[in-house]
Length: 345
Ligand code: UDP
Ligand code: MG
Image (cartoon, rainbow, N blue to C red):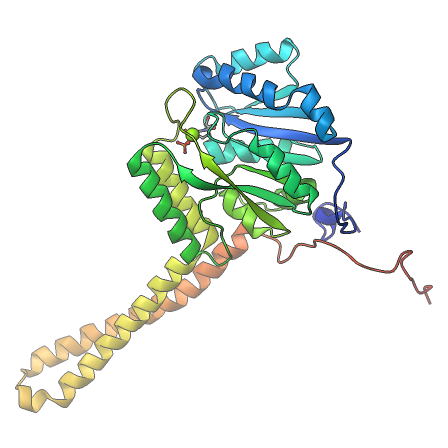
């Protein structure tokens, strides 16, 4: 059963695990989101031209490389320059989004439009060195379904660097799954993983987290992250804040759980304090009206806290349901070949 949406849809091209995968005749799509990148575009295309020169492709046995450039509503000449290069024969397709949807939306669009055997995702500003893709491809040959870039060192703005450092650690602590540290969206993925990602219908997408969530065989490829090749960063502080909060909310309901337990604990505390007050009211000489008032407030508080606790339990589950992630993904199916089938009675 390989109807779209059925459990096996994502495993339509399940393959027996082999010791070494063969990259001969393979196609590679490279997704690059671009937003106002006219300054860096020529550097990027020049570098890609060298790294993915026909001789190198032949040596690696890769049949073809195509760029999937997603223009995220650029207001400069980016889209026009790319269209020109495509007319001149650049092996690429340009997907122009109707407005600026943000980096994560652009990556998502790229994944929807990529259809090669292997799919890479990288930034336009050469902070994800294209040469590393060859090392990721090697990891794929050795059996990895996802080879993701992991930063050894990071260059650039100290404040941003520290922010990212803290953010990845916070998300890793909060996340319900194992999230590798210091990894962005830079990666090479097998088409099975891309198919799995497309099965996640959620609209709020934190793609590096979803990529970890789908599982399969994941391998880190270390690299030093250089500074931006040209132009200004396109991630504003506002967009970074959005990414951070989306990332945490998308990967975890633990903050909600913390609030839940906080309210429950607080409710319990008020009740205990009330009992204490009642028990020692003689010795403390508390006026009656005050006791009555406090009893009212404490009871109300406890009831509210308990209601919040229950609400949290449902809100968290509603959120998980709304995300619509499949309860499981199949990586491999091992059965006798040809499959032993009993004749129908
Ligand atoms: N980008 C995008 N839409 C945005 C912001 C950024 O498509 O709204 C792209 C940008 O063109 C680049 C990548 O996302 O290819 C990473 O952006 P940037 O280099 O500014 O991020 P940083 O390296 O500062 O985290
Ligand atoms: Mg950058």
